[in-house]
Length: 575
Ligand SMILES: Nc1ncnc2c1ncn2[C@@H]1O[C@H](COP(=O)(O)OP(=O)(O)O)[C@@H](O)[C@H]1O
Ligand SMILES: [Mg+2]
Image (cartoon, protein in one colour):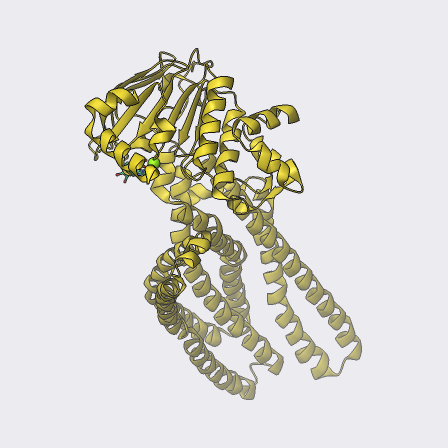
């Protein structure tokens, strides 16, 4: 168990403390009941005293009911404490993830974050519940049962005292043997989960490429591995039962022999024999419980570490003190920027970028896949920080702004964009929750989305399903552009955001930009020459460097890459 995680108990501390208290009360009753039974047998039945039997019998019933009540309360508090603890942990992780920068998220991968929030937390919850119930139960039970046994017969007490370390030792040995196998199982679970998640998320792609069989085989392989590892682990744990039974029968045999001799000799009563049997069993069962909890704690320790890892992660991007709250203009300056996803010393994805953009300009960015177009623009809203050099917006280093203020003014349509479950209007309002219907309609008109939205039977109230899979690629892109426009940003960045839109609509969108938002700086990354041809400046990216800057006319004369792309695309459209 990891102490640091207990901070998340918060309002469930009360239940966490109440559980062992009621467990201990329950144990007291469970230890007194056999003693009371022995009294009834040895005194009441032996002397044929009906009044005594009824009187003591009623006390016995009350004790049994109290034991039941305490047990039920302990169970209830344990369940509440466990579930509450899990809820708080989940809450803490979720809030932590919200503070993560792109860099932090890169580090964990989203499927691993999901596993941590589900499987790992469930493990911790189960272990926690078992621990608060069993941690006190087993030792208190063993000690009290031993005390009672000593009171009844010291020979048997010695017998049990010898058995406890032997059985305890064997059970712990088994648990330790099984532990590494369980750890492997949970590592494999991670792989299994990410395979499932990846496949389900991309199920449409899998089907389109008829890769079901391949995916089935991949899944089968991992799931077979989990099966084998689990079998191995469980095979070892399965030894618990026969060992336990063997020891139990051996103890019972010895107990009956010793007691039999004592009863014949007249130094022990039959009722005492029954209660001794119960105490012996209770002690053995407690040992079994201890080994069980031990395994559970070991299993959960890996989960605990994985949760702690997320909670300990330091959000990479914080606001400076006295961060600047307003962005004066849409000027953008890259001053000799080097950037690596791995931080200083890593492979450079951007090399010596020096680029100066005036507010209101339209900039086209073109270049092959992997030429770092996305990496370049992601530095402007500070999705990542530069490794060397600086990026300035409105003449101020982006790191000096309040992040929210900066991102409100730098609206970016990501290359891999998603819509969320909800209506179209709700999705657009992500850009600005308080926008009026007229404003929502206006930005949709600019993004050439209004006409197709009107054609849906429910118009702006059409439900978007998870990921936006019920609208076409081009429609999704236009909705994402509308959403970005609603912020009324000073800088608008489209990262390959019209790739699925036809050329004519694409041209209409750019025309609307020119006429309706002339003062907004617009950066357009595109594969199509026609999308950037009329830009004020075109930046040609190649292998993380700027290969050329200029208007289309200038680049046709000076830049080989631009000329080649231009010619191949123009030829393509002429034919
Ligand atoms: N999150 C990331 N972590 C590490 N490397 C990345 C990440 N995103 C992109 N890269 C790398 O940076 C380079 C440029 O990628 P990118 O900017 O996406 O290119 P483009 O948008 O031009 O296709 C590629 O080599 C890519 O592998
Ligand atoms: Mg890209």
